[in-house]
Structures are given as C-alpha cells and as structure tokens.
Length: 196
Image (tube, rainbow, N blue to C red; front, side, top):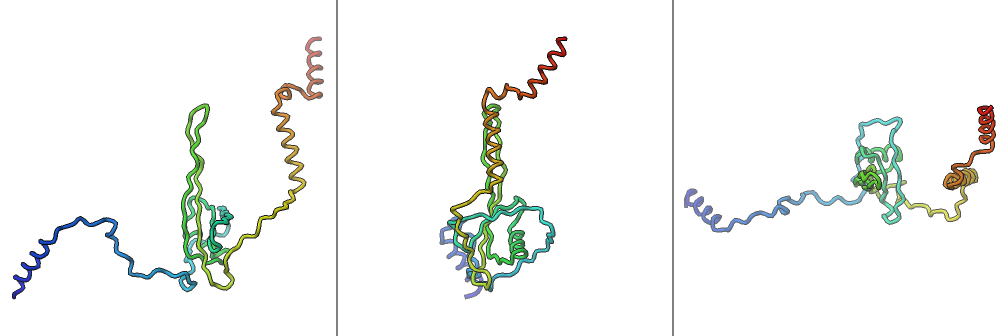
C-alpha cells in the first residue's frame, strides 16, 4: 500500500466521524505543572525595585475572626497592587506571603432627598494575604481577645460631654434667639445712644 492510498483511507475515516462543535469551556488544557503545596520551600522573596523611604499611604489591618489564622486582611489604597503589598509585608515586617487576593469594594449609591442627585461613596480596596506556614518565627497570627472592661480616657469623656451639651443647646429652638447677657447689654447701650 503506497502513501497516496493511505492518505485517501485516513481522509475517508475522518469524514465519517460527525463534526461536533467544541465546548469553549474545555478548550483550555490543564496545566502540566503539579499543584503547588503549602510549603515554605516555595516562597521566593519579592523582587521589589520600588524603594519607599517615607510611605505616603495607609494600610489598615482588619480584625477578621471568621478567617483561619494564616490569613490576614488589609484595607489598602486603590492604586496598591499585589506585588506592592507582598513586598511591603516582607521588607517592613519580615512576613512571607504565599498568595494575595484583592478586590475593590464599591461605595454605596445614595440619592439626595431634595435635589434627587445620585452619588456614590468612594471605593475601597481589600486585600487578603495567605501567610507561609512552618517557617521559624512565623506562626499563625492569633488576635488577642478584645478587652471587656475598657476605661475611656477621662479627658476624652469631658470633651465629649461638653460637645454634647453645646449640641443640645443648639438644637433647642428657644436657644437660637436668646442672646448672651453681655450681648444684650451692649445692644441696649447702642439703642439708647441712637435714640438720644
């Protein structure tokens, strides 16, 4: 059997198979690489080229009691990316990070009652990092218990009471139109000068 006959036979067998449209979900081939285990050997220090000496951003560490102890969540600026956070945590605190997940929380839409204008509050970016386990000096982070008997600062209490007292006075309708005794005296004196 020569090569021309073999080509004709193979073409005939291909033509006999009905053509099925491929499923787009199955077009991606599985990765030949094995799943990455959670071992510290996999960690490579970030190669951050950005040198920050005086940071001009604020990162807020969030209390998340529902997450496992090797996860940590942060509120970051919108322009902050995953590599920045990984680099920041490693260089400032010496914390090794395996993965970083980030998402933007959109602000709530509010409508003004009087002008009917619709506005949206500013968005926030939340980033969750998975910390390396099994490295010496880097165990799971466990939040301390919240104190139950908090004693507020006395100065703050006095300032708060003073502020609330002035707010109450302003809210009373009669207080708006009353004058201080000193102001009333000066007005009375001015009126007598005008009438003379």
